[in-house]
Image 1 (cartoon, rainbow, N blue to C red):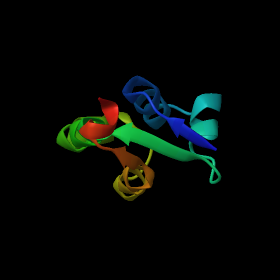
Image 2 (cartoon, rainbow, N blue to C red):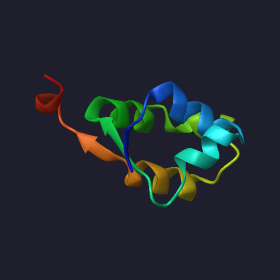
Image 3 (spheres, rainbow, N blue to C red):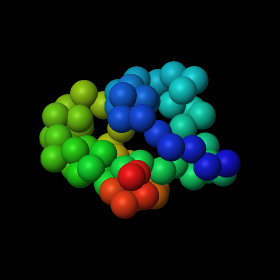
Amino acid sequence: MDLVIDANILFSALIKDSLTAELIFEENLRLYAPEFFIQEFMKYEDLILCKMHRSRDKYIEILHCLKCISRECLQ
């Protein structure tokens, strides 16, 4: 299944265990996010890592799973 993910939903899933987190991290799910979204998550990586219950390696793995939507596609 393909889904475009909202930054707030992903942030929430990263910092707490929930049904949403379970659904988002399903293997058969392809998540798409705008390029700036991924850049923001990388920019605030240290802050996010302080709040989440996953390792840095898992955080990077999650970000690498996101498919980037270019700005041109958003217009």
